Length: 380
Image (cartoon, rainbow, N blue to C red; front, side):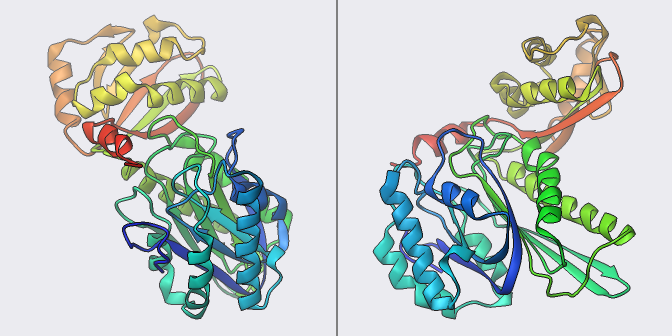
């Protein structure tokens, strides 16, 4: 619903409610500066008694000190009273401008309508209520058919800017009716985050509010074992990866979605280090925007990554078009073919190192004029 948190009057207040206690897990920002909802959320998960999530956009409730913590606690207490559940079984999530306190009186006044408006059909509205600079809501669904019944997964996320690995300025909610133990859900979530939300970047900035919650209600009655568990983990990962892809696709001002793939590294750590450095390079990202196969910028980024490799064994490809072989240019004709590929909205930059067998990928986007405009005017 719209509670008046945003001056625009758009949806800005959302509630996820589980009718029975759910198993909960969470992964949070690695930023030393953590918002009040992150500090509270970390205290409350993992848990086997989660009843819901109270989320808002328009105000991050970050860098607000003890007053911000009290605001979040009061909001959860009043929500718990209306839902008739223990306040400590509710989780907070906020996104928006840093340094401002929640407009608590507006939010408390809106709570009765928020609670009375709960409906299984309102996931799309919830997805809109957590948007900030996003241009579209981000929702992913999967269904797993098992002999004992169906297990469902629903993922909702927001994020478009301040996106960098080890989480980004994003909120994510992965909901399932599978029966899982606390430790099991936490392990599945952490593994999925590592290969999805921690493999994306829009601008290299890690936020104060990054949060991904997973809730498992057990309402399906389906326990997971054997191949059923393997299939569930695969679908859980798919949901996270789809949401991560949508975040990059919606990167602030972005016109291109680019997969950076490093192959043939000595080990996975170095492969990821190189992929991340290239994906975050402003010069590489502006070259993507200009549809310019400026391979020198890629090699320069690799060279400062801190990884060890032989520059004269590197091959570079834009999709399947080779532009560099053994560290040397393949000429203007190859670059012209690559330029035509880069006119597409999505393509892959492959970096072949010939140092080993390790592979790593990152998703990134280009850096356009609009990114600067959006962020220059974010508060004004």
